[in-house]
Figure 1 (spheres, rainbow, N blue to C red):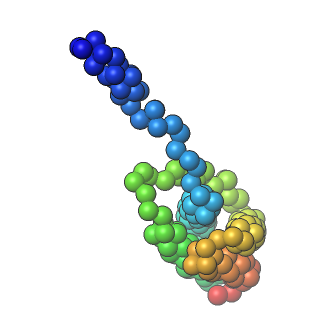
Figure 2 (figure 1 turned 60 degrees about the vertical axis):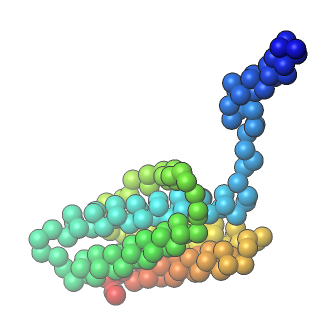
Length: 168
């Protein structure tokens, strides 16, 4: 009797030793969650890019900033703040218990004003294009948010061109 009872317990004991591995690999997150995570990582990178750009511009401004330099710093600060707002909104859509992996550090930005603004314009246009390309199949409320961010990033391109010229 004891032998029969212990024979039934053995498979249960072996299963318990494996712990959560017995459950297998969890399924990958749905496509919209993967896109949300990618959008968060991309927006984190954009925020870091603007922080680096502002640091570069503030160094070049020095102690006697010209009017165009002051306009550029003020304008980039405004755009950086919008990207922080985008990031906050995206993060508010993701409910999770584990921290997000951080996006890769942005590429080294050029130090000349012309090249710096060209790099930012390119990054904004690429971000807008990428987001627009990912709208198909998203749930409506998430698609609306992604489209809104894409439109905002697209409007940053001509704004940056004006800033480069020293116009507000």
